[in-house]
Structures are given as structure tokens and as C-alpha cells.
Image 1 (cartoon, rainbow, N blue to C red):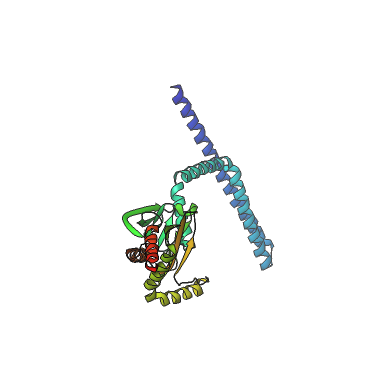
Image 2: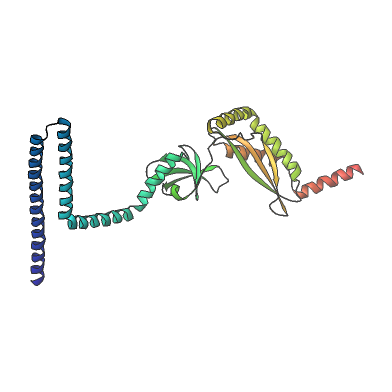
Length: 296
């Protein structure tokens, strides 16, 4: 009973304070209107010059509007302060609750403004890699390519990634040069293997597969260089040597391919070279012994 009585008293006090504020507001508005009416009437009667009268009327109107606003702020200051604190608390709670959604929208705006990729491009972000098949304000859908980062076959799985990743993670676009791309893959050998012959065979096979569209690639790269201000990359196939450890030799095959066909071309070259040649150290020793026996 006592608690109910206290609550009712508080409600009455609150309602009484609101009524008092409303009455003060009404008195303020009525007073401002009366004084504005009297002052403007006085100006219209006493000031004869049109420009001066219009000037005084405008200044008077603006002055009374300012007085009215200041009076309302003084009357409702405490209530406005309470309302502002409530609004700030509500805004903070809303931001905390929808943080991920806000980041997703921010990521969508960021990738749209930067133009980092389009539909159909093959991208990699964090551990996700695939072809972009759909994108909206909150998420981007990838048709997964893999497994791993060096293979180019579709796994049949779908990845839906939140756009918030585009705010904090870098994006690798593997289809940036559109119709034709420069594809690079590595073939490891042991130091004692016949990697010199393998280097020649891989270069020959790469030239064979690139020959039908090599000039088209060169023209495409020249156009891309003019439109986007990029240096024209060398499109001729090349095979370079890398020695990551003392016992290994890696052949780096670099060649132009049509977009989305790099996996097919890579497998064609590997199958062609390894099906017709054996570069192992044992095979090289057999060939050397046979040649020596023929010479003797």
C-alpha cells in the first residue's frame, strides 16, 4: 500500500510539473505575440520610409522568434536534457545491437565506391576464394574455387560472406584484366633432376598453347594500359628458375590465358610435358650411361 501511494504521489507530481510547464509555455507564447503585435503596430504608424519600416519589421520579427526560442529552452531545459540523454542511450544501444549490420552496409558502400570487383570476377578474401555470382547490401555470394589457393576448379560449394569483411580485409581480384589474364604456376624439382630440359619443354608447351590468342592478348593489354594507366605487362610465355632451398629447384611458368581457363591450360601443359618426358635423376643417369656405352 505504501509503495502504491508513493507511486501515485510521484505521478501526480510529475503531471503537476508538466502542467506548470505547459502553462508557462502558453504564457510565454501569448506574451511574445502581444508584444510583437504592439511593436509592429507602433513601427507601421511611426516609421514613414518604406525600406526602413520593412527593415525594422523584419528585425523585430526575428528578435521575437529568438526570444521565444530562448524562453522555450529555459522552460523545457530539464525535460529536453532528460530526453536527450534517453535518445543518446537509445542510439548507443541501437548501434551496439546492429554493429554487424552497420559494418556490412559500410563494406558494401566501400566495395562499390572502390570498384574492387564485379559480378563474375574471381576474388579471394581471407580464406574464401571463388567466382562472384551475387551481391547485395549485406552479403556477397561466391561459387567456391579450390581446394586451396593454387587450383582453379569449382568445388560445387557456395560461400556467402558478410560484406563487413571488405572493411577490414584486403581483396585479391584474379580477374582484374578481364578477358585475358597472366597465369603463374610452379613446378618443383629436385636439384639432381633434369630440370634444364624440363624448363625448355615447359616453355615450348606454353608457347604452343598461347600461340592462337597471343596477339589478341597483346592488343587487350595495350587497351587496358591506355584506359587504366597501367604499364603493359610482357605477355610472352616465360619459364624462370627459383631455388627456395639448397636441394630444390622450382620452375615458375608464367603465361597468358583466357579468363576462367587458367586451370584447363595449366593441366594441359602439365599432362603434355610429363606424359612425354621423364625428368627424374634415375632416368638421367640411365640416359648418360647409354650414351657413354654407345661412344665406347
